[in-house]
Image: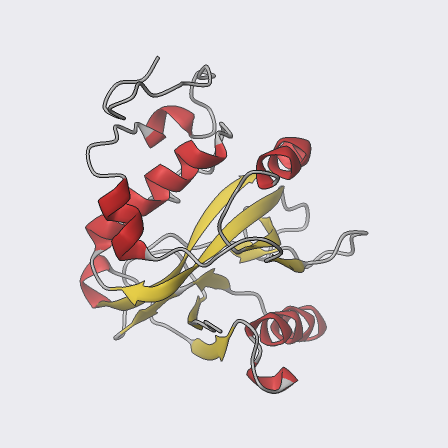
Length: 222
């Protein structure tokens, strides 16, 4: 069974000069609960709530700073959407073939009234090290989900998001793996070579885009 290792880095700020503060490593399934990334993330959220100490998250590992040149590897791809699109996300999940988490997130840390968001986090079967590959895979995944109004910046390899720390009725983190497989970045990029995407047109605040259909070559959209 494939059990990818995820690497999480925490920052106090989104600036390029921000230094990494904490880092965690865990697998999807884990031999024990302590080695399971999902449990680690829940414990971390609870710790941040109890200590009132909030962080931004990245599933890339960094040498030092929050910069593209300092990225060592990327283990998962996050796509973030406004919370009010939850019904569209649930519908898109029905045909989304990749194992993924849904993480309840927010727009800013240390905010009294944070704007709620939802992150679709897709773990990679093996990590990538090239920021261009991150951008390409993120764009393709966005097209595959077909949901407009993603958060601005989540196609950047240094994209950070903040977990939702307020009280809410839904689980903070849920793994969806039934009848799905881990995304292999090498295979995924090869299979989608030549497929056109324009993810910026789908970001929050952009004009609504119609759902497009590719022709038999995959190069043109209608």
